[in-house]
Image 1: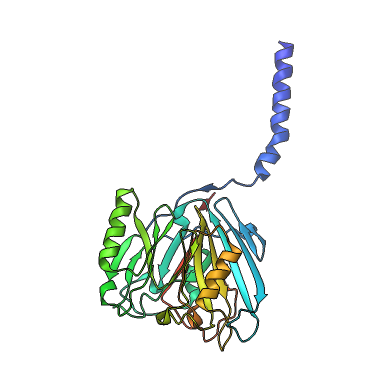
Image 2: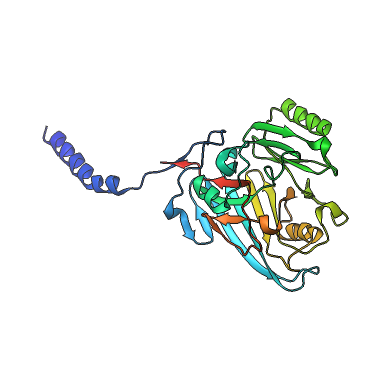
Length: 307
């Protein structure tokens, strides 16, 4: 009996000693996928996740920001090149939003306001879905909005992001091409979540594309550029080149630079540049933007960590 009482006393003391540790231990977050609907936003960003101004990490996302000065051949002088590497735990963390979160409302918005409203850890401009409604193939967050590919004067490459978070590109796409591509995806158990009509494609299936002879994309001009890349499954990069007034990169230089930075790159796709170039980290532009203007839509990466 004495031994039994002694054991109970020891257990009680140990529990009392452990209690302060249990109370003070931080809650452990778990990754919970985000809903598909555009009205669902990223989880609140954890202030403690900022390891520095150039790095964020929580249980669901890791972001690192880098920059370097460079003198491209087409540029009048040196310019700043920036790249952000993003790793996520779930495909739902790669998302899009629109100004006013509405396709019908043609109003544009400041990129900062959109990024903050959706709790974006990292955000970038997309294409120009509401600058004109008679252009492109548009799916956003799983909702089909329009197919105007056959009305375009010049066919363009279309970027497709599926529900596994993987990229594919339909070159010089027509409506029939897109229908065939989406049917093939469906046969493989995949669904298109977001599509973008701008381009051109810079890297396809790990191969750099020859894009210097694309006058419709102003390929030969040195200007501000931005592109999105898939490096591996659920691993991505955004590359931004400062420019304007004769500074920046042309598209072929951008394609080469992406492969220089990321030899493992699977896909890279050029998006709206110039004054529409917007790359934000924690709701703040990380670059100089010449003639910056309101835009219609963002691609963003969000946290899915929930305590």
